[in-house]
Image 1 (cartoon, rainbow, N blue to C red):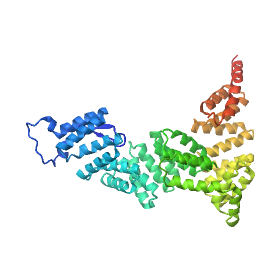
Image 2 (tube, rainbow, N blue to C red):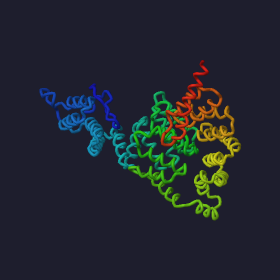
Image 3 (tube, helix red, strand yellow):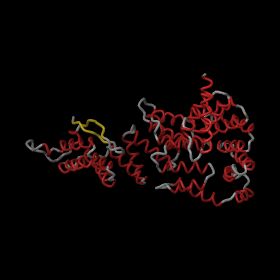
Image 4 (cartoon, rainbow, N blue to C red):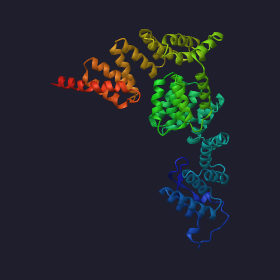
Length: 469
């Protein structure tokens, strides 16, 4: 048994394992004389390469892997490890060649298959990548990396429900084990969400984030669910969590949120920064271009021919909410009535009620909606705002407290909690919430409120000191 390191194809980092090199090299046709120097032993050279690989000397490791392959060309382990080192150095063409050579030498080895599939996926060669991942899962049903990648591909390509169901069964079997990774739970959630099992998907994605709070796939999926449920507030918070390092997926999410908020120009700017726009980005761009060219008057004319066109009604609901909330309210109500199962229209209707200052009606609607979607932060925020405007501080405080408990970096709820505590003479609690607000508020957006809070703090400190005396 000879010790060496397998290298993760994604990170290029070595992971210590053991492999039976004697079996791996059983096909060697050249017999090395016993008196030959160790340097001519391909296994010895391979192990030297592994040592350099582990120390981060990737260029040196590649040279030694090549030396080992000169001595013994039929050495799949050396080809694979050379590929991982080349991939880590950004030499994609060389890495692809090495992975293909490793597979040709050992056709049932899933490590190079998965590595090659991931490389091809990044290049956009989806058809071959999917075949490699499917083959890997066929050979090794418990291959979590291949299962996760295959899930991503089949979800994005709108695979038939039967294929998704079959894949969900395999993923669920692995996710149920004690050491299941966040990636597996995220894959399970993606399949459940695509199969319209949203409650199950939310439980799975929550499990993924409990294992790895920074798992980007899980965060993006949760943001997609939030958008589908009209929870723009939560979608914004999730977008902030994946803002660094910036990626095309994060830019698309930000553009989608801006579009849903009724800011087509800003959404298009976000789309322009995407380096490799896919179908979703192109579809959103097309819709935004149509929206920019279409005025409310033109949309209203379209309704004359098709009074129940939900897309037009929903767009008018968003477009008019700031400038003409009363009119927006009518369109929001009609959109909600035309598509009662779409929670987004109902939340838009409630938001329009708040903007139209019909606070009592808004409270009644959001109380009902929260029985259906209790974790919808946009519904909570609108309910809290309506209660605050109705001078019902105890009820408003409970809703704002829910928001800060579930979205601890969202500034708005801290500001309202600070005001509520301040007005109640609870100065220490007011101070704590004002300080949290200042910590998380964006000066470019909240400049006026930040100035007001900063003006209030010295007087508040005096009141606190006075109470202590």
